[in-house]
Amino acid sequence: MFRPSRPQCRFCSEACVREGKRWRSRRAAGAWRGSERGKECRQAQSRRYRRLIPLVLIEAPTAAAAVPLEPVPAEAREGQRPAPILDNLSVRMCKRPGCYELFGVPTECSLKIFCSAACRKALRRVLAREAGYHERRKAGVRPRCRRSRAVPKPRKRC
Image (cartoon, rainbow, N blue to C red; front, side, top):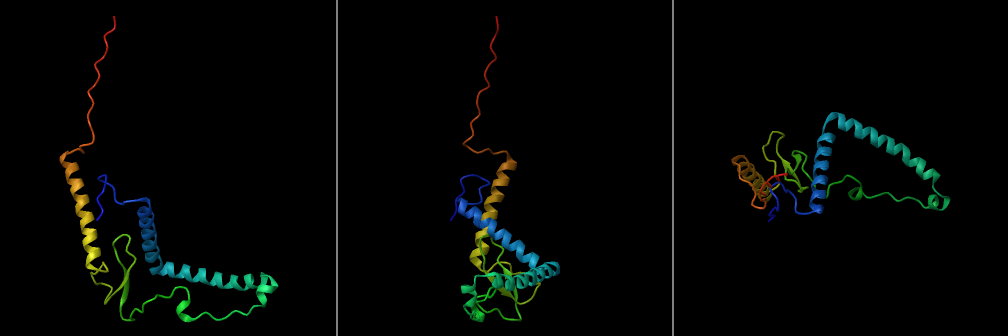
């Protein structure tokens, strides 16, 4: 359970800040890669990479080039998911920051946006806490740690 030290504090440490940035960038990349333009760019990137690989192998030292390359098994290739996802399900990523779970939904218009009830409750707690901060701020309640100083009286000159 995270108890913030300041009203707008959303993360408990610098490591959590980095993880939050990583989650946001992964989510944005997933949305981009899901679009038609993103798919085209990714395919072009893959074509450029496949053209580059033979050049790297040719320019390699002769001792390294003499070793025959073994085929990589299908389950160890880049981009393969560890768990099978059924073909008739759409795949989504959990909306809670910091959760990287992928889950299946039956249709694109499904309202499920969290991987579990625990993620849904965690995000609700954060939103409720921040709503309380905003309500107190609107009401004019100031934090207790701030103290008002008395205004110094101006000196009289002779």
